[in-house]
Length: 276
Image 1 (cartoon, one colour):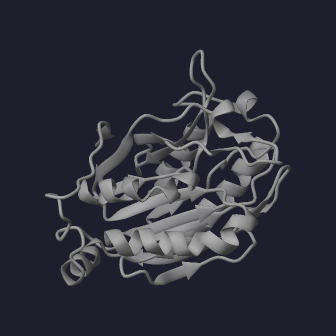
Image 2 (cartoon, rainbow, N blue to C red):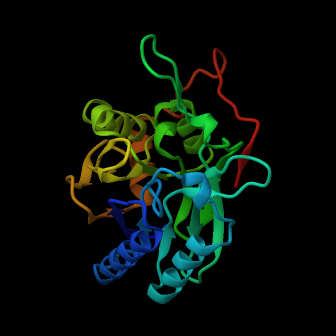
Image 3 (cartoon, rainbow, N blue to C red):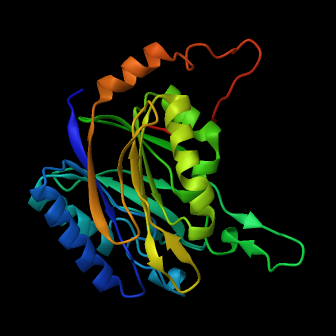
């Protein structure tokens, strides 16, 4: 597959959807000028406020329509970042879309893993009370190669990334809204580990800024299959860029053949639902 330039558009999304999409439009225009062919946005791209369920929308809908128009206008691929997708009779799904340069929605992916935690002495947090979990791993066979997708907390589930690599993914996109507290300790370590152990590029777009309920870490990064950080943002909204070479993933997998050397006679990993 041909090499291409990717961009992460690190945003400070707030509670005004129209302002968030204006910010995204400015970033798309900038990234296109810098030669990016595939742009990636963070989790909660279009709304980061107190009432996400009220902002849920269908697919196709306002947000995918906006990104489709910009993709056609600038002739770029866009990983939209995630937003609340309306689900009849249920809580919204936390969903992203991949849009091609003709404005077509090539696939969608809904966050699989819900952050539900109960710590003695603290107030429980249940993401599953607000969102409906997705039900399948998603891979997209495209003109840019096989692409994989995960969202934020999914990063902590290594088996999911292994399955995407085994399914052919050489680049995995990770829209996120990691907090400053966990991001300082875990963000880089987890991203580089997922890249190294699977021989894949990880393109991790994070939110930044003070939100109504937390501080987002920023530090979006693009990591290559050897685990090298090719580009890293700070804590301000910005675009960062790096080249993607799918053939380099093959080279790394030849040098460190961890996918090939697995002991499937002793253990195995499988999925019941993988959509390509």
